[in-house]
Image 1 (cartoon, rainbow over the protein chains, first blue to last red):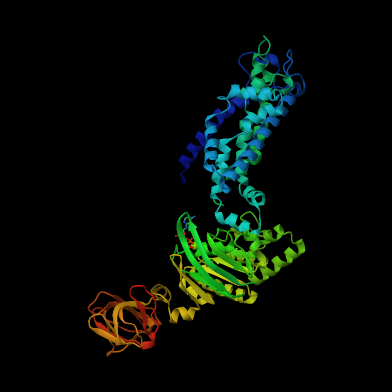
Image 2: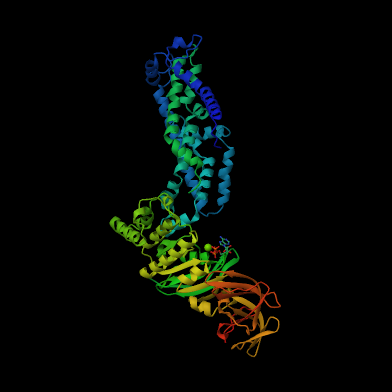
Length: 283
Length: 351
Ligand SMILES: Nc1ncnc2c1ncn2[C@@H]1O[C@H](COP(=O)(O)OP(=O)(O)OP(=O)(O)O)[C@@H](O)[C@H]1O
Ligand SMILES: [Mg+2]
């Protein structure tokens, strides 16, 4: 739809700007809150302009004990934990689903479709549904309070397998035949041809999975008991309830701000590939 | 360089047999065209030779080695696909080098071979481009380059020109022929286009419904088609067929018309006459009711039916000939240009 009428132009810009303001306002308030001292944030009306305590709040949040009067890990530690978890989940998911899609599309083995449907059925079993048995398994394997425990139960992924299967099915058979004539074995074909051809899809999936992993709340809450292993998303919630005093908004908001940075960075860095991966169809 | 032997090749999918006991020998350096209508099994046969399709029974020999159980890469062949099947993420150079790299050939030798092939095919300036930055004809050249660098015993082509426009097709056809003669590599070329087949092949294998109808030189196929199918398939416009009765050297057809023949056949036959072998002759035995004429410049095609019947008939006359629709034209044909086939089996009956 390409129209070129000035009124329509102004109207559509207005709508977009209103939308952006609505979405951006909470983020702005978060930022403003992170730049004031704790006392200012408890007085009404809340400030709408930044204050002068940004660096102070920043260092206290990132390297200090976070909230004063509690014994939580410093926020850099939580960021690191979250990052490890998100990366392990996204790399793990991508690796496993690439391989299983490869097997299902390119190899003939008994019960191939059976396996495919088995994988498919796990779509109906997200972590929340199987949380007790999964917890039991992870606990028995001694993986509580570890990166493995945080990520492995979230790695198996029917969605990603399904997506890569669709991607592989769009690659013409001649590509495989050409590679066979060139003398490429299955693994070579996988590395040299399939992976590069799915590059944009892998990138798009990485963005989605990184954010999925980063935002995990329930599972880390269950299996981490040591403060050293807490992730940032679960901690924000705990900070609100911590101590019987009124919430220290400046620290909490600074933590929230810090928690936003890695996903934003991933989205921005991978934006081009991400959009290509979701829209490009021709191989 | 090597010869290829197909011995009793059968291909079945489940219990549907799509190729029936195909046999034939291809000599060293020969270019064979496998031709036939869509679905007749051309690609399947080629892919069995390439090793991309399993062999249900029979043998494929390249040189003196039975290759039934060898992987495609071990058969020392190169194949050019209809849609080129270039690797989209690799440059032209990488595409051509990939097979050599896998075979662990030294880097500078790979580079040298790629350069040579690029020179032959005149694609030097595209070496660093990606396939998507090339036109169809250029991609076709790259696909051939990829085949050449491997220096194989056998080239296999599966309708390599059918995605190109008509003019480019003619040009590339000539180039493929020249290239093949220059390199002297035994080649098998699949097409459904009979003109391509006739101009390109040293010999043609005509397939129909999974059976080999005839295997011979283009001239043999044109002059002495072994079956009705080959007779109708080779030549354009295609041969006219008239139901006829043979009796001691006389062929009776249509409404009380007859023509002498040197053939010993007797009983119900099909008489075949090529449109270009008809001679306008007012006393001729073949009378046509004209329906319309097509003027092609160099010649005129006269379409009609055999007088008094509804058997379609086409005559090709040199130059510009006028014929009014509804009028009657008479033709004769030389005895040696009459093809006689058994009416039941469709097999050629020899003099
Ligand atoms: N995987 C398959 N399973 C069953 N039948 C098949 C399979 N592949 C091909 N066939 C059948 O085998 C026959 C020959 O197919 P083939 O692809 O060799 O035809 P072709 O002569 O190359 O035709 P075209 O000119 O259209 O490419 C066809 O009738 C087709 O339906
Ligand atoms: Mg085919």
